[in-house]
Amino acid sequence: MKLHIGVDQETGLVHSAVTTAANAHDITQTDAVLHGEEGVVFADAGYIGVAKREEHQERNVEWKIAKRPSKRKAMFKCTQELATEQDKSSIRAKVEHPFYWVKCFFGYSKVRYRGLDKNTNRLLMLLGFTNLLRSQKLATTG
Image (tube, rainbow, N blue to C red; front, side, top):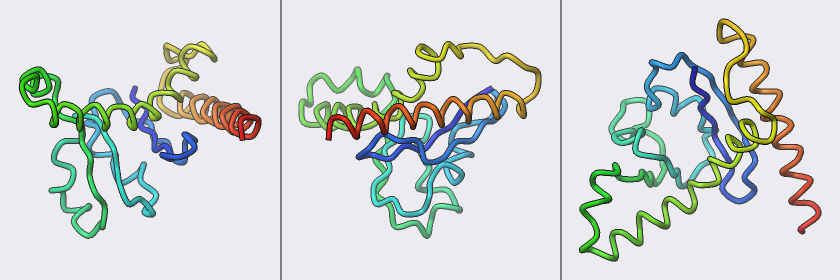
């Protein structure tokens, strides 16, 4: 089972979530996790080629897709390109924080049920709790 989420860049709150079978490719769920108001989309290397897909041709979005790890290893000579990749990674890290909360804070590292429906309900509930805790933290820090 895979969980695909869309996270707001400024607040770090999850705005959309989709679950799929583990054999579904990440790029097929891009449309489900975007809300349509994005100007810039940051994604990991699993989304390489998303801008070429037919369903995203009419989006007016700047795609910032991370390079594959093998390509990043070859960048040690070109410091500007490596710095750009590190900037992408630091922004994209906000997407990983809800996964940390769900896995480590709430203890959901393995699926509990058979089938996607029950697991999806549980994950959506935990993502809602994550958003509540994140928004509480945002409110106290200002």
